[in-house]
Length: 440
Image (tube, rainbow, N blue to C red; front, side, top):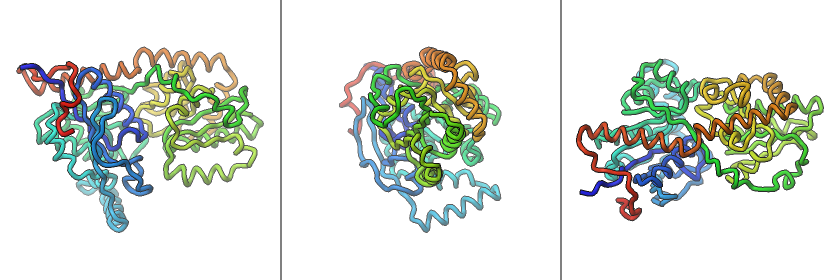
């Protein structure tokens, strides 16, 4: 009998073209594995952003199936609670959590969702050889384990733990889930150490990490400085990423205000996915700045890939002093463009950024420390260039998407073989005809 390709099912709360770090990682891993001959499917929601699960915009992608770069994507329409049910659930979740009653972690997952009717049933019908799912705190990682247990196939969970997110980490149900999974995919050595400290078997922890394509900067949109009236010789600071409070976007604005107060001419670009925080709190903070300072700021919500890479090319430094980063793909993106970075001094970011060699680390929320870091990089172009060069070398050695896909392929194949036992696997990594995909 001719061996068939390994069938992999990825379960993700939302997926390309939705924006997010775990979404981007699973997209590139899935497409890379498909290019190597594995049969990769994705089950996901119709959401365009994670905030839509609990409120906000009800604009959605269409439910159904499509092929994206060799990966078979099925979007399930997510169920959103009514305002009354949401209020009851919020009150109950808060009370359960406050009193540490049994099941409060599970209630958190129910609160955040997304609820995707039919996902487990369709996963069982698909009959994958392996299921991998991301990310916490979202409900699909729990459903992925349920489907895997029904099928008797290995399940790998990538939680993407944010050490600064106390609400996320305070969940016994999450860590019970991770202990039950066949493998846990981690992003940094810090996350490995954290999970070992709470009792997970180190043999089931697999460091995957994040990646970037060295070819991506070639897609950069040209002429952004001219388009937005930024002088060619003006220093430019970039914040890029989801504009949430925990990512440090407001800290960057406050630090830049200190520089403008003493006459610094640097511009600031805030680029990335809009959030409820950016539409409300951040917008109010920007509106209260003096007009001459606001003229230094460019806000670009939900930008294209070309514009994103264009800003990386134009900036002098990426400032992203996050307290809730699980990895930090934005640092890799800046490095591959040869740019220095400033990150938050947390476990995951300190696992990635070598302070004083390829970037600087500051305490999240510490405006004065960020001001000092910005002054240092903006005033010392030789040091800034050296940081950027060191970062690019690190990316090329450890963090290209090819490196990440290599690691994922090895992990998935080992898990499938271990479940198969001593028997010869019935699958191979040979190329397949896409039309052979069941259910499409």
